[in-house]
Image (spheres, helix red, strand yellow):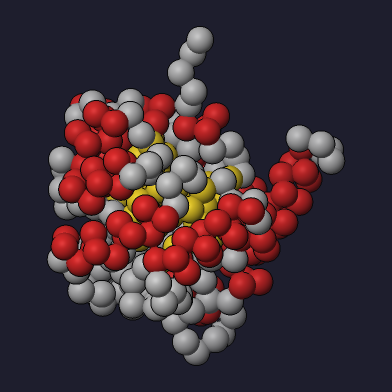
Length: 276
Ligand code: HH2
């Protein structure tokens, strides 16, 4: 029997529900009063059609300060314990947090630093045989929105992801366990974010499933002419469908039922049939 691939486990389109257990996240910071509340919200997302939930204990919003490892563990471990047995990823770039999350059942490590903050995350993922998301970021969350610069954002992001994919495989992670993510909003202007989605085929051509996080990102607020940093829900859906049309596989979102409905419709149109 052949080994199941990333695409077998998370077929296109799969929705990943966001469970931020941080006081300061971009759009949903401080949403949950307790680990039980966060776990309840995660279970609701799965009942609403999410393929998995992404639990994170450190905000990566522009300007965010890193938290200590102890604080990150203190935030995520009770939620992971309350979610035993459900499909989930851990949004971390620390090896010890990844290890603990995997012990508690995480099926994927979502590393927004693409193994640059703590390269040992690769060994943890490889030893456990779980999935890995490698995301592009220019700079770090503290400074990334200060004058992001590229000659050609799409080819530079693609070259970065190919390089990090090579690094992960050299460190022992099975290639069929890896997905890549252009990192919408991580060291990019609104136009650079839109260009990345417009030419997502270049990222898809790397040959690994593509995960995108467009939900409520500030680029969508700019597109809508909204003053604040948080994009609206209809705009998030429109952007997700545009990314799906260009080949994206996994969608990291806040509003699970709306994205499941929109992407189910988009997939049916692509197939030209009601039944999958
Ligand atoms: N975006 C955020 C966090 N983690 N992971 C991946 N792979 N891709 C993303 O685009 C991505 C991510 C930021 O969004 P959010 O969770 O809304 O905010 P915060 O970082 O403040 O928790």
